[in-house]
Length: 321
Image (cartoon, rainbow, N blue to C red; front, side):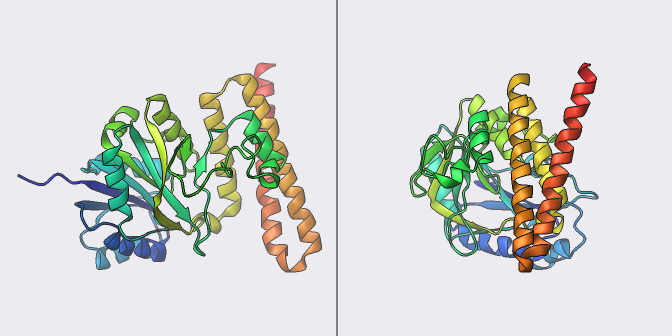
């Protein structure tokens, strides 16, 4: 009788060959006790990602897409092919620590109500990368807009969305976990379903964690396992497009879970947020000549978001008049 696969690791890749290799290499030390299958879903990369997998990691199952399917749809391809009792969704720009998967698997095995488990996420320099979230509300969005969560990060009232007040070394149940690394229980997956493919990229993690909670599962932050997330490897290639995609995904999430009145308030707060950031980038562009290319890109990105928000607002006004 074949042994049941303990864990399926699914990695979606798009033009991050070097980081993908690092990620796959780190899987070798991330588990010493489990049977692990690894599935790489490549979103029509034009670099040497697929060649590197075929050459250096022959045991990895490679699924090559003819076009960029986006994060959710590509992950769903991997999930459908996965045989594990637990499913790990891992970004290609992640490096796992020693025994990371073993620790997470053991903890989930001991706590049957956990649907999704997320590790401590570190930056490349070893500093903490915020990976836990509250679900968006008008209040915590307003606090972000006014930078109150930055000015008073330890305040539970004002430091809401990114939960900066939380102890990063404490295991806690949270609303949402960053989608850069999840371990999902198979039973939870069967109830929650696949990722919503209406989210091309971004906000699919908020959406999935919301659906998990609505089904009665816990989403838990587990700092006893840690990873390094380099972050922004794909988005750095097209920052204006990716920031706009992030905004579109956020608005889609709001339409899915909030009523018309709340959506108007959300839209106003988000519009003001991008306006504030555009003006800040403009001021830094004028004051710091060494940062002008960076700040000009930021201005363009936030301006694109403002124009998109105004365009959809005008469209909705016209459709109701």
